[in-house]
Length: 308
Image 1 (cartoon, one colour):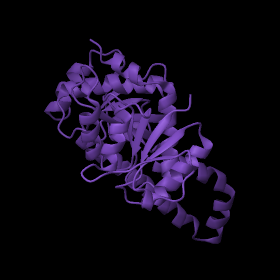
Image 2: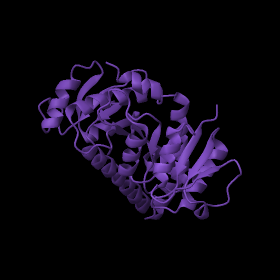
Image 3: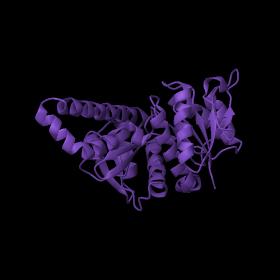
Image 4: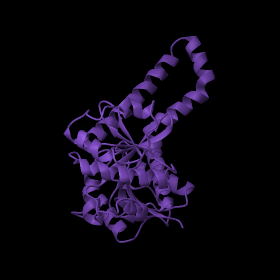
């Protein structure tokens, strides 16, 4: 079945036409049916099979797209717009999965062992310990069903490995998570990318969003510094020529475009949030991830993970 995917092209840093171009390019390469939420006058010429969902006075493109998802017009909704606006529209328009306390945004991080999931990356700034326990359930289900990791390991983001580290929420969350067989303990930020093989890292939305943005900035700084160094001496330029394939692979793995589109786990629909700085290439990557989640039919698995 070709999943129908609604892509919001309004409200991001880049113009709607550029975002639509990336979505259209992805639709040419993926077995999907594309719907665009945006003003038709701001979009490029579209193939006849691409439907446009236009926002109306008092209803944003996010709200129009979520309403269409709730009505069964599509299998997924993708937006590079405001995370807060997407979370509010999704909770109000779709509702939460049975038993869920708060939804969590599940971002993907590159690591030496492949990929790690960070939840929550910005949906709920002031969590309670019980939220983090449910984030572990949701993250493990997503890692298993979408990423194909048979036995995901869970870690708690903290400032040290000892159980007594962290603030009140982190200490209480550790006590709850310690009963899980898949829990490996506290993990420090640097360990997520390098030393310890952790598949799902749970934290509150405030600390998770800070970590995500710090890692994005660090990756960009490393790539910029590497490019600058390799343009220096003749020896450096010759070395860069020989190492070009390897350097391109490193850059590909570190760039946020390869890890774009974070699912909002816990609502009654497949909703993903792309980076607000997304360009056409980033939107194309986000649609690849959205299609992958559609193929996994992950919603029933997420609901089952919360069952008492």
